[in-house]
Length: 255
Image (tube, rainbow, N blue to C red; front, side, top):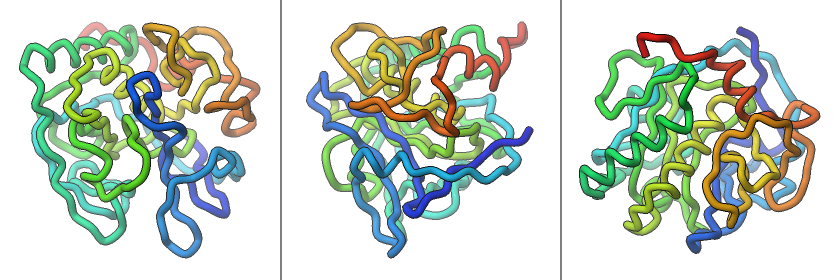
Protein backbone atom coordinates (compact mmCIF):
# COMPACT_ATOMS: atom_id res chain seq x y z
CA UNK A 1 0.00 0.00 0.00
CA UNK A 2 1.45 3.37 -0.98
CA UNK A 3 1.24 6.26 1.44
CA UNK A 4 2.75 9.69 1.99
CA UNK A 5 4.90 11.26 4.66
CA UNK A 6 4.78 14.90 5.70
CA UNK A 7 7.94 16.96 5.33
CA UNK A 8 8.37 20.70 5.95
CA UNK A 9 11.03 23.22 6.96
CA UNK A 10 10.16 22.18 10.49
CA UNK A 11 9.50 18.46 10.35
CA UNK A 12 6.17 17.69 12.00
CA UNK A 13 6.55 14.58 14.16
CA UNK A 14 3.55 14.50 16.42
CA UNK A 15 -0.07 15.40 16.87
CA UNK A 16 -1.62 15.90 20.29
CA UNK A 17 -5.03 16.37 21.83
CA UNK A 18 -5.68 19.21 24.25
CA UNK A 19 -8.34 18.92 26.92
CA UNK A 20 -9.45 22.42 27.83
CA UNK A 21 -12.64 21.08 29.42
CA UNK A 22 -10.60 19.52 32.25
CA UNK A 23 -8.04 22.27 32.57
CA UNK A 24 -5.46 20.87 30.17
CA UNK A 25 -3.72 23.32 27.89
CA UNK A 26 -4.51 24.69 24.46
CA UNK A 27 -3.07 23.59 21.09
CA UNK A 28 -0.29 21.11 21.75
CA UNK A 29 2.06 19.40 19.35
CA UNK A 30 5.81 18.85 19.28
CA UNK A 31 8.18 19.54 16.44
CA UNK A 32 11.90 19.65 15.85
CA UNK A 33 13.24 22.83 14.32
CA UNK A 34 16.20 22.82 11.93
CA UNK A 35 18.76 23.29 14.68
CA UNK A 36 17.60 20.11 16.37
CA UNK A 37 15.90 21.84 19.31
CA UNK A 38 12.37 20.92 20.38
CA UNK A 39 9.65 23.42 21.17
CA UNK A 40 5.90 23.75 21.42
CA UNK A 41 4.64 25.13 18.09
CA UNK A 42 2.10 27.70 17.14
CA UNK A 43 -0.88 26.60 15.02
CA UNK A 44 0.77 27.73 11.79
CA UNK A 45 3.62 25.26 12.31
CA UNK A 46 1.42 22.31 11.40
CA UNK A 47 0.17 23.68 8.09
CA UNK A 48 3.13 24.03 5.69
CA UNK A 49 3.36 20.47 4.42
CA UNK A 50 5.03 18.66 1.52
CA UNK A 51 4.39 14.98 0.77
CA UNK A 52 6.75 12.14 -0.15
CA UNK A 53 5.46 8.68 -1.04
CA UNK A 54 6.52 5.65 1.04
CA UNK A 55 5.20 2.17 1.72
CA UNK A 56 3.38 1.38 4.99
CA UNK A 57 0.74 -0.96 6.36
CA UNK A 58 -1.59 -0.16 9.24
CA UNK A 59 -1.11 -1.91 12.57
CA UNK A 60 -4.08 -4.07 13.54
CA UNK A 61 -3.07 -4.72 17.14
CA UNK A 62 -3.09 -1.90 19.69
CA UNK A 63 -1.46 -2.76 23.00
CA UNK A 64 -2.82 -0.67 25.88
CA UNK A 65 0.19 -0.62 28.23
CA UNK A 66 -0.84 -0.04 31.83
CA UNK A 67 2.40 -0.94 33.61
CA UNK A 68 5.50 1.23 33.96
CA UNK A 69 7.48 1.50 30.74
CA UNK A 70 11.01 2.64 29.93
CA UNK A 71 11.33 4.62 26.70
CA UNK A 72 14.22 6.26 24.92
CA UNK A 73 14.63 8.59 21.99
CA UNK A 74 15.28 7.32 18.50
CA UNK A 75 13.64 6.16 15.29
CA UNK A 76 10.22 4.75 16.19
CA UNK A 77 10.39 1.12 17.31
CA UNK A 78 7.64 0.30 19.79
CA UNK A 79 8.78 -3.29 20.31
CA UNK A 80 12.09 -1.99 21.71
CA UNK A 81 10.73 1.01 23.63
CA UNK A 82 12.06 3.63 21.21
CA UNK A 83 10.09 6.74 20.26
CA UNK A 84 10.83 9.84 18.22
CA UNK A 85 8.60 11.76 20.64
CA UNK A 86 10.93 11.30 23.62
CA UNK A 87 13.33 14.19 24.21
CA UNK A 88 16.55 13.64 22.22
CA UNK A 89 19.37 11.79 23.98
CA UNK A 90 17.22 10.80 26.94
CA UNK A 91 15.81 7.68 28.59
CA UNK A 92 12.70 7.85 30.79
CA UNK A 93 10.56 5.51 32.85
CA UNK A 94 6.87 6.36 32.65
CA UNK A 95 5.01 5.25 35.80
CA UNK A 96 2.19 2.76 36.00
CA UNK A 97 -1.37 3.90 35.40
CA UNK A 98 -2.62 3.46 38.96
CA UNK A 99 -6.36 3.39 38.47
CA UNK A 100 -8.31 0.46 39.89
CA UNK A 101 -8.85 -2.69 37.85
CA UNK A 102 -12.52 -1.74 37.54
CA UNK A 103 -11.60 1.66 36.12
CA UNK A 104 -9.04 0.10 33.78
CA UNK A 105 -11.53 -2.44 32.43
CA UNK A 106 -14.04 0.34 31.78
CA UNK A 107 -11.38 2.30 29.94
CA UNK A 108 -10.40 -0.63 27.72
CA UNK A 109 -14.06 -1.36 26.93
CA UNK A 110 -14.66 2.30 26.05
CA UNK A 111 -11.71 2.41 23.65
CA UNK A 112 -12.82 -0.83 22.00
CA UNK A 113 -16.28 0.65 21.53
CA UNK A 114 -14.88 3.70 19.72
CA UNK A 115 -13.40 1.37 17.07
CA UNK A 116 -16.27 -1.10 16.98
CA UNK A 117 -16.91 -2.60 13.54
CA UNK A 118 -13.31 -2.14 12.36
CA UNK A 119 -10.56 -4.70 11.78
CA UNK A 120 -8.40 -3.74 14.76
CA UNK A 121 -7.76 -5.49 18.08
CA UNK A 122 -7.11 -3.89 21.46
CA UNK A 123 -5.32 -5.85 24.17
CA UNK A 124 -3.68 -5.21 27.53
CA UNK A 125 -1.47 -8.29 27.19
CA UNK A 126 1.91 -7.62 25.58
CA UNK A 127 1.92 -8.96 21.99
CA UNK A 128 4.89 -10.52 20.23
CA UNK A 129 6.44 -9.27 17.02
CA UNK A 130 6.83 -5.68 15.89
CA UNK A 131 3.69 -4.99 13.88
CA UNK A 132 1.67 -3.49 16.72
CA UNK A 133 1.25 -0.04 18.27
CA UNK A 134 1.79 0.58 21.98
CA UNK A 135 -0.41 3.09 23.78
CA UNK A 136 1.39 3.89 27.03
CA UNK A 137 -1.34 5.01 29.41
CA UNK A 138 -0.30 7.02 32.46
CA UNK A 139 2.29 9.49 33.57
CA UNK A 140 2.67 13.05 32.37
CA UNK A 141 4.40 14.71 29.45
CA UNK A 142 7.42 15.51 31.63
CA UNK A 143 7.91 11.75 31.95
CA UNK A 144 9.13 11.73 28.34
CA UNK A 145 11.16 14.92 28.76
CA UNK A 146 8.59 17.41 27.46
CA UNK A 147 7.95 20.76 29.12
CA UNK A 148 5.22 23.29 28.45
CA UNK A 149 1.48 23.37 28.89
CA UNK A 150 -0.15 20.15 30.03
CA UNK A 151 -1.50 17.97 27.25
CA UNK A 152 -3.63 14.86 27.16
CA UNK A 153 -1.57 12.76 24.76
CA UNK A 154 0.99 12.59 21.98
CA UNK A 155 1.20 10.44 18.85
CA UNK A 156 3.46 10.27 15.80
CA UNK A 157 1.61 11.63 12.78
CA UNK A 158 2.46 11.84 9.10
CA UNK A 159 -0.98 11.78 7.54
CA UNK A 160 -0.91 8.04 6.78
CA UNK A 161 -1.04 4.74 8.70
CA UNK A 162 1.88 3.88 10.97
CA UNK A 163 2.96 0.68 12.73
CA UNK A 164 5.46 -0.19 15.48
CA UNK A 165 5.17 3.23 17.12
CA UNK A 166 4.41 4.37 20.68
CA UNK A 167 1.44 6.58 21.50
CA UNK A 168 1.26 8.40 24.85
CA UNK A 169 -1.99 8.98 26.77
CA UNK A 170 -1.20 10.85 29.98
CA UNK A 171 -3.26 10.41 33.14
CA UNK A 172 -3.75 14.16 33.69
CA UNK A 173 -2.51 14.28 37.25
CA UNK A 174 -4.14 11.09 38.50
CA UNK A 175 -7.67 12.08 37.49
CA UNK A 176 -8.95 8.76 36.19
CA UNK A 177 -11.81 10.07 34.08
CA UNK A 178 -12.84 7.15 31.92
CA UNK A 179 -14.52 9.09 29.12
CA UNK A 180 -11.84 11.76 28.90
CA UNK A 181 -8.98 9.26 28.89
CA UNK A 182 -10.86 7.02 26.45
CA UNK A 183 -11.40 9.86 24.00
CA UNK A 184 -7.75 10.91 24.34
CA UNK A 185 -6.60 7.39 23.46
CA UNK A 186 -9.04 7.15 20.54
CA UNK A 187 -7.88 10.54 19.25
CA UNK A 188 -4.20 9.61 19.39
CA UNK A 189 -4.78 6.19 17.82
CA UNK A 190 -6.74 8.00 15.10
CA UNK A 191 -3.56 9.90 14.24
CA UNK A 192 -1.57 6.72 13.67
CA UNK A 193 -4.22 5.72 11.11
CA UNK A 194 -3.71 9.02 9.29
CA UNK A 195 -6.54 11.09 10.73
CA UNK A 196 -6.11 14.85 10.88
CA UNK A 197 -7.76 17.19 13.39
CA UNK A 198 -11.35 18.03 12.51
CA UNK A 199 -13.17 21.26 13.28
CA UNK A 200 -16.34 19.73 14.73
CA UNK A 201 -16.77 19.34 18.48
CA UNK A 202 -18.53 15.96 18.45
CA UNK A 203 -15.84 14.22 16.38
CA UNK A 204 -13.14 12.33 18.31
CA UNK A 205 -10.48 14.06 16.19
CA UNK A 206 -11.54 17.56 17.24
CA UNK A 207 -9.75 19.83 19.71
CA UNK A 208 -13.07 21.53 20.45
CA UNK A 209 -14.66 20.72 23.80
CA UNK A 210 -17.94 21.16 25.66
CA UNK A 211 -20.34 19.19 23.47
CA UNK A 212 -20.53 15.89 25.35
CA UNK A 213 -19.57 12.41 24.17
CA UNK A 214 -17.39 12.16 21.06
CA UNK A 215 -17.26 9.53 18.30
CA UNK A 216 -15.72 9.10 14.86
CA UNK A 217 -18.38 10.86 12.80
CA UNK A 218 -19.54 9.53 9.45
CA UNK A 219 -19.70 12.90 7.71
CA UNK A 220 -17.23 15.07 5.85
CA UNK A 221 -15.86 17.75 8.16
CA UNK A 222 -13.52 20.70 7.84
CA UNK A 223 -10.08 20.43 9.46
CA UNK A 224 -8.51 22.64 12.08
CA UNK A 225 -7.62 23.06 15.72
CA UNK A 226 -9.02 26.32 17.07
CA UNK A 227 -9.43 27.79 13.58
CA UNK A 228 -10.23 26.29 10.20
CA UNK A 229 -7.36 25.23 7.95
CA UNK A 230 -6.72 22.97 4.96
CA UNK A 231 -6.69 19.25 5.69
CA UNK A 232 -3.46 17.26 5.19
CA UNK A 233 -2.68 16.31 1.60
CA UNK A 234 -5.07 19.08 0.51
CA UNK A 235 -8.03 16.79 1.14
CA UNK A 236 -11.32 18.66 0.78
CA UNK A 237 -12.40 17.48 4.22
CA UNK A 238 -12.24 14.48 6.53
CA UNK A 239 -14.81 11.81 7.24
CA UNK A 240 -13.18 10.18 10.26
CA UNK A 241 -15.39 7.07 10.30
CA UNK A 242 -15.12 6.47 6.56
CA UNK A 243 -11.35 6.99 6.54
CA UNK A 244 -10.86 4.49 9.37
CA UNK A 245 -13.02 1.97 7.52
CA UNK A 246 -10.98 2.51 4.35
CA UNK A 247 -7.68 2.01 6.20
CA UNK A 248 -8.69 -0.90 8.46
CA UNK A 249 -11.62 -2.53 6.73
CA UNK A 250 -14.61 -4.03 8.56
CA UNK A 251 -14.18 -6.24 11.61
CA UNK A 252 -13.60 -9.92 10.94
CA UNK A 253 -15.59 -12.52 12.82
CA UNK A 254 -12.57 -13.99 14.57
CA UNK A 255 -11.82 -10.62 16.14
